Amino acid sequence: MTDWLGPEEWEAVALSLKVSFWATLLSLPFGLLCALALARGRFLGRDVLNWLVHLPLVLPPVVTGYLLLLSFGRRGPVGSVLHDLFGITLAFQWTGAALAASIMAFPLMVRAMRLAIEAVDPKLEEAAATLGADRFTVFRTVTLPLILPGIIAGAVLAFAKAMGEFGATITFVSNIPGETRTVPSAIYAFLQVPGGESAALRLVVVAVVIAIGALVLSEWLSRRVARRISGT
Amino acid sequence: MSLSVDIRRGLGGFHLQTQFEAPDGVTVLFGRSGSGKTTVVKSIAGLVTPEQGRIAVGGRVLFDRSGGVDVPVHKRRLGYVFQDSRLFPHLSVRDNLAYAARASGRGTRDPGEVGQLLGISHLFDRRTHSLSGGEAQRVAIGRALLSEPDMLLMDEPLASLDGPRKAEILPYLETLRRETGLSILYVTHNMAEVARLATHIVLIDEGRVVRSGVPEEVLTDPDMVRLLGIRDAGAVLSATVAAHPDDGLTELTVSGGRLYLPSVEAPVGTQLRVRILAQDVILARTRPEQISALNVLPVKVLTVRRGEGPGVIVQVQAGQDRLLARITRRSADALNIVEGTDCFAVMKSLAVSQTDIAVGLQSGL
Image 1 (tube, rainbow over the protein chains, first blue to last red):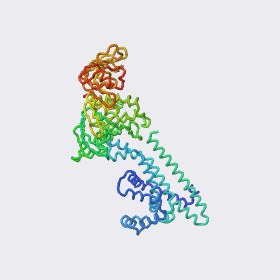
Image 2: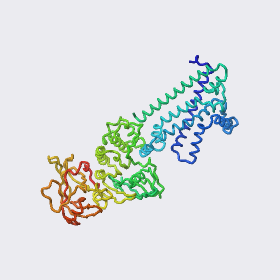
Image 3: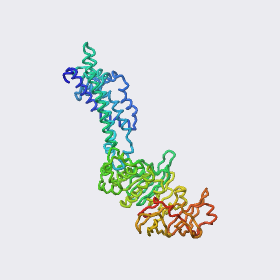
Image 4: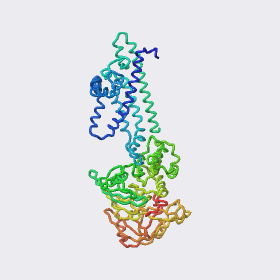
């Protein structure tokens, strides 16, 4: 396997997996909160939040990447605070790639979770409350188990989207081998040099395998969970 | 535990203004659909908030607008049995039952015992989706019991079940009342359930309480006949099993005499409650001879209520009990049936079905 992929290609695959993993994991709690707020919340600015969440889906990825660069760059309003207070730099780092990937994948994650939350019958939560469960217990013991398939589906979708993110990533963190050159960036780079087609093709195969694997895994996981939940 | 309700709520055009006291026992909240009964129960449980008023269970104030009290749902200690069972689909029957004990933090009642009481012990390992409607509802009742509530609220628990399933659950509800001594507020618009279960009745119409009292009085009040439904109107009598003759009948004594009914499976001496529909009662001025109907009670006419149609409702006194008879206006005129007339109430034995007989339930408790 390692022989089949060159070191540069292997590096890109490993980096893509790392970036996508962290992008998915760190956006999970925020995604769940957003989905809950959008599905259940009755507050001023709910429409604005909905827009914001969906914006990366409709904006050109380059625009999202550029906006990230403006705000999270070393001199950007958020970036400078992160740098001065915590010594964290995101621009041109793999962490920045993870941020770009998570923001681009966020709408997909939230949509899947929101659908699952909206499918939960509030009558069941009412019943739990009459049995003596406070709001947090109701969420933990009734809502959360029932929306678990949606959470898994959202996470896997987000992971797959993060694996394929290109436009925002290359704009925000460039295409630095070993740091920000993910699989799509690497394919792009290989195609720019003469004789790079075979390496690009090998990465294409890897991308396809990972994408299909993720789909199959998510399908299997959510079916398993759904079965456990509905008891069939 | 007694319940005291006095609430007001204006919902669009619908105005709810309900005030009643429910003593220990089974209080039936009876009214047509849309009369506001579910809103009342939900207010008691805390699932909806009245605009004004006060709710207390056994002296514990759950809601008092002017006093600023509004105990949250999960702290009200009221078991709620919904029309749809609302079992948790991700949990087994056993875990649904265990959930109640854990959530309420009062798991001292033995789930095995409750399982026996409701006949659901054999279902413990089942998933909820595989239960029949009747089984699911029994599990839901068990779950509510295991949260060890101060009082049980049952919102048309049998309404979504078909006839045979209803008949299957009713005896369990009677047992429940007898064995646990728990006070129940039972919402229904089914007269058979009222007659079987109620020890107190609250009649509600368009958000207001129109009558509150023991079944013997409320059900035989000619003024309530319109609300109860003319075909469902009828009295409930307290009876005692006197004998089981070998011709398939059971002999009962009531305060006004003797009744023969289709065989009741209860030992001699058992207290019963029998529902006798107004339209099953015939009135005769003289004691009928050579008639196939077995039950003839001497009665005295209390009131004659004429309606718009061809029928009249006659309220009669039979011993300590009151009965209703629905006869035509023509007959009432021909027989000169007026207040104070002595006559005889005639009933076919077979007109009383098994679902109209409640075992071991004494009214006015």
